[in-house]
Image 1: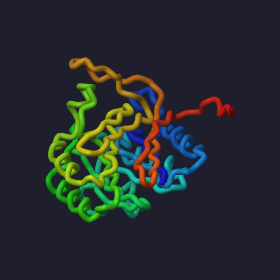
Image 2: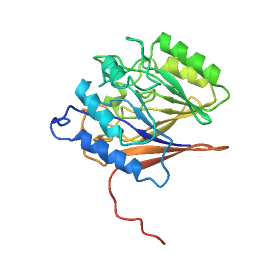
Image 3: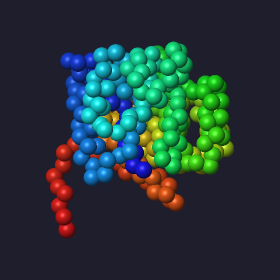
Image 4: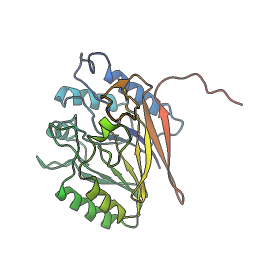
Length: 265
């Protein structure tokens, strides 16, 4: 099982640029080409939120048309820049998308030996994330039902600090409750997140939290407590997660773009 993981694509309507300077659709198309160029095609693609920058219907249409070039299924969740009902409508033809208006966009999918549990941390109008007691209860039920199969949980907002103070101020606010549940289920192989706009891996609550680079731009890496939010045009990236039976999930950070090589030795 090979899983591609993209995040924070920040699509805008046609003719608009992200922050007035970045063609996020072209950046996503480049990510798609990077996935297409892999010598072994991933079994699926996970997109962990901030799919659009402002949640416009037209931006979701650009997202869907760009991702349509991928032959494998794409499973997506919202981030704080998304709009729940616009996303529900945009992915309404996907079997995994919950159809009930107003309900969280959380769902479960079997991925071979693995179980994917997708969570919705969107609090519309806010930068931070929250799951809420109802969704946390649903998560616990699904984890009990999934055991002993290995589980991947994906959500947009990381439940951990990164050391980048401005980003840590807008993380998952009910991370302690989420962490209590995660600690009770050792079959959680990985927690996959977005939001950070930087690649990060950290051990947490008996599992590992992984975040890929954004496909557009990266948050400045600074550990100064009073540093403002700033971004850099560092290389975009994605992650590949390879399920090795008997060993677990092996993760690789993959830069997005066209590079010289390969040079064989």
